[in-house]
Length: 250
Ligand code: SF4
Image (cartoon, protein in one colour):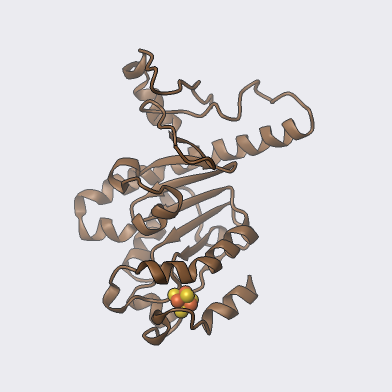
């Protein structure tokens, strides 16, 4: 990880290197269970060389607290490590040039849960989806749970979104618990043991009918069990277009 960080700090792979003050590799626990991936550094991040240290960072800290997570216990980074001028959107060539660093960070940390913050990191794990439709929902990809969240800055610019974002972060402990259970069950399956609760690794809670992905490596979009329980009666009827799953038993 330190080698990646050193490479990022002197990287010249894309044009953002010409306008940055400091590259921002990311920070946190190299063995984090939960990894947050935002869009790119802003003004304050560029000045300090650290992710999420401005107003959006303050809001992220509040959100982490809501989720019962301490900032040092998670890892936080972005899809591009250098600030786009005037906070413009990162461009495809910049995201592509920087993706190798993120790939290596994910491989080394190997988090149980990846939380995408905003549409640019969402696009990497949820291609073709809209943040307004899948925020607060998760997809299991190669045995790892990926949760789509709005970018904290969206809550600062649009007050009505702030409470929605807080509500989505309240679900994170449930997703973490599910991810831990999935891992336990996968280990037991490898050892030839029956699952401790007799459940199925795929038996995750769903609010709306399951949205099946058309990509091979992705498996499903799920919502936290709490929300699912409250709307359970709404989906009593079977729907042949969707796969019906058992509820996750907390
Ligand atoms: S954004 Fe990424 S690829 Fe571009 S210069 Fe910075 S570290 Fe290198």
